[in-house]
Image (cartoon, rainbow, N blue to C red; front, top):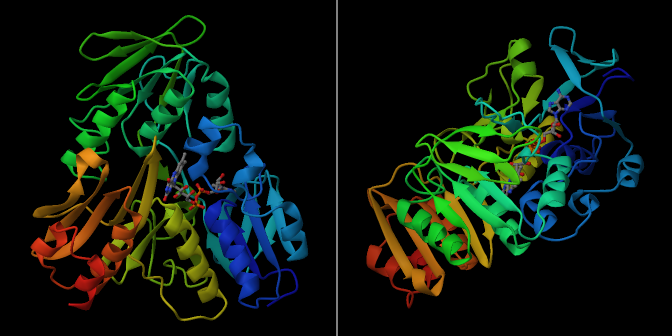
Amino acid sequence: MTADSGFVVIGAGQAGGRAVEAMRKAGFAGRIVLVGEEPHVPYERPPLSKQLLSGDDGPETTYLRDRGFYREQDIDLRLGARASAIDPSARRVLLADGDELAYDKLLITTGSRVRRLAISGAELPGVFYLRDIEDALAIRARLAEGAALAVVGGGYIGLEVAAAARSRGCRVTVLEMEPVVMNRVVAPEVGRFFADVHAAQGAEVRTGTTVSGFAGDRRVDEVVCSDGTRLTVDLVVIGIGIMPNTALAEAAGLAVDDGIVVDEFGRTSDPEIFAAGDVARHYNPLLGRQIRLESWQNAQNQAIAVARVMCGSNVAYAEVPWFWSDQYDLNLQMTGVADRWDQIVYRGDMEDRRFTAFYLLDGVLVAANSVNLPRDVRYARKLIESGARVDRDALADPAVPLKTLLEA
Ligand SMILES: Cc1cc2nc3c(=O)[nH]c(=O)nc-3n(C[C@H](O)[C@H](O)[C@H](O)COP(=O)(O)OP(=O)(O)OC[C@H]3O[C@@H](n4cnc5c(N)ncnc54)[C@H](O)[C@@H]3O)c2cc1C
C-alpha cells in the first residue's frame, strides 16, 4: 500500500457512511476517502417521507454522525464532490473537479436515483420527487393546510407522503396505475387494507388510474389522467420507483445487471472493487439467488459486512430482507421476499389494525407482512431463515406463540 492510496468509497449515503465507520472499527489504519456528491454528511433517508415531512425536524436529525466524527476518525470526507470515472487498471478514481484518488480497494455505494415520468408538464414547477433532504424540505414548505396534493404512485413512499400531507391538513389524492396500492411489496388484500385506511383518513385513492400529463402556465395546476379526468392541484409528488446509479461501474467495465453484480462478500467482477447498498445486486446465500434491495437494513448491514471483508474478514453478508413503512398510526413491517407464494395465512384481524400475513410456497414460509405487530416479523424472519415447513393452523392461531413454531 502506498502512502496516498488505501480505501476510496464513492457515494456518501447511508451505505458509504456506515462502511467507513466499520473500516475504522475493524482496525484499518490506512487512508480512507469518502466521496459524496451531496452537500450533507451521510444521512438516513427513511425520515424524509415520515418525521421530516410531518414534523418540523431539521435535516441534521437524519445525519449518521456529525462532521467532527469523520475528523476524529481521520476519514477524508469530500462532500459536494462527484466521482466521474474509475480506472480499474490504474486503480484510480477521477473526480469531476479534476482531482484523482488512488486506491488499493474501492467501494461503490452510489445508491439510486428516482425514476422520472416522461410526460408533458413533468418539468413544471410544483412537480416534485422525493429522494434527498432538499426534496423533502421543498415539499414540506408547500404542504400548507388546505393545499391540494396529488401523489403519483401508490408505493410506500407515495403513501407515506400522503399520510404526512394529511397530518398537515392537505387535500390528498393518490393516483395509482395498478388495481391496488403497494402492489410490488404486499398481497392485494394488504394493499386494499392500506387503501381503505387512507380513505378513512380523508385521502382519496384512485387505483387503475394512469397519469398522462400535467398542465399549468407558470406552475402545475392540473393533473391530466388518461381517462380524460383532470384534477386541480397545488403540488404533485411523484413516487414511481428508483434506478440504481450504475453508470460509473458500467463505464469501468464491471458486470452490471440492474445493479452492480457482487458476490456474498460484496466483490464485483474486479477483485479490488466492491459494492454495497441500493446499487448492488448481491448473492444472498439464504435465498440462494442474486437480489437487489432498496432498504435501510441492506444499506447498513451489507455495507458493514463488505467493509469488514475489505479489511480481511471472510464472513459473507447473509440476512433475510427486512423493511418497514409508517403510515398514520400503522407500522408495516415486511420480511422475506413476497414475489412468489402459493398461499397466504393471516393471523389477527385487519379490523383491529393488528395482523400478519404469512406467505408460503410449498408449505415453507418465504415472507411476512405485519401491521402493528413487529414481534411477529421478528419470529417470521427466523422461520424464513430456518427454511422449515410450518404448520398453517398454528400460524393462523394467535393463541399459539410463534416462538413455539421455531422450536418445532
Ligand atoms: C424518502 C425515502 C424513504 C425511505 N424509507 C424507508 C423505510 O421506511 N424503510 C427502509 O427500509 N428503507 C427506506 N428507504 C430506502 C433507504 O433509505 C435506501 O435503501 C438507502 O438510503 C440506500 O442507501 P445507499 O447508501 O445505498 O444509497 P443512497 O442513500 O442513495 O446514497 C448514495 C449516495 O451516493 C451519492 N452518489 C451517487 N453517485 C455519485 C458519484 N458519482 N460521486 C459521488 N457521490 C455519488 C448520492 O448523491 C447519494 O448521496 C427510503 C428511501 C427514501 C428515499
